[in-house]
Length: 65
Image (cartoon, rainbow, N blue to C red; front, side, top):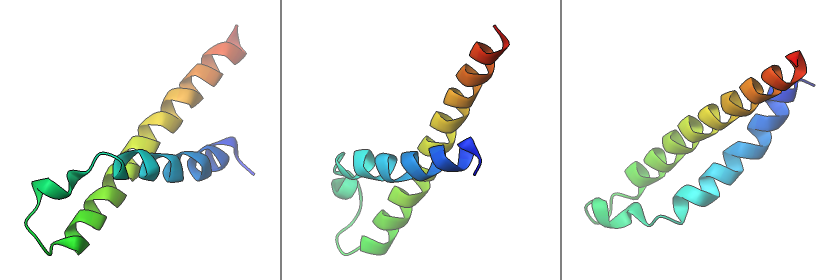
């Protein structure tokens, strides 16, 4: 298994947990549950992508030292 795949499996649920704690529901109209869930999912994918690439860059930098 690739290290990136393992990191994605760790960071996607972590980012979902963090983003759902922000209470973005008040930014949307009432009864827009599907749109809120889609936004949470997209934001968690974006956040996990950034975190995985950050840690892979750190790993690559440390391994070259």
